[in-house]
Image (tube, rainbow, N blue to C red):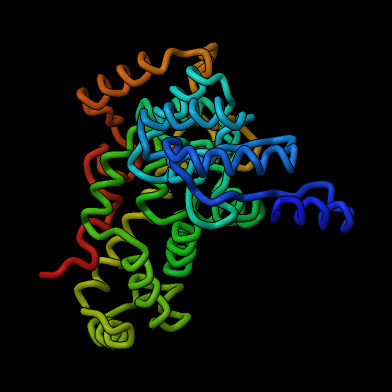
Length: 338
């Protein structure tokens, strides 16, 4: 009855598209399966999308097969793909049912629903991260002109507390440390290390609070901070002076790192990376040329993932990340209880 009313209302309202969302149900509950089939008969939908929990594992194949047999599925939506599961079920469902994966859910908000990209899922299964998604997130949260201004400052080694505050806020917008590192090739283990060390949004907020407790002059020239100023700043943020000292050390190290990256190689590593991020150059992160993940055997991919896991799967290290074993400079001890 509800489906009939929805169809009538959509027709009267002149809507081109309307969606019917049925309540969750198990593939073994035949009564609810029959109810969903009845809704299909009334609505005669152009698309019938099956929403599957990405953490279900290989049982998701049985779910997809049963729903496709009884109702008829045109595509699949995988949710909770931001969890620990790497998405092997996606490949299995595609191979067994022949139905395409249309969307993946990476969070609870609308902007966390993304179109399915086979090479990205394959990269996650192999522990290669998803650098393309990382770049896209950066593009969504920072303007190209702003990035250009930042790049020029960083190349000159100009990196004060205002810049650090902007970087911290940027990281929070992109999902926090664990989310960012989880999308970087080979950094999955380090992402868990960051989470275990308490590297969540709370730490970033504490660091931002310390910076906001400074005067404009102190933010622009952190080198002028002496004992009395540090004591006032820490008290204003409700934290210890030792935490402020860690933040200042992090700012110095990041400034040195940015300056080195700006000078390395032709045009500078920093310039190349930011140019690639905003459509002015190449950006690594996709599967090797000629490799079509959609045609690869799911079992072979999973076996490769296990092999990489056994070998560590960690890269030689990125600039400033401690050779692939530690957290970014200055962050590892921040906020820890003594």
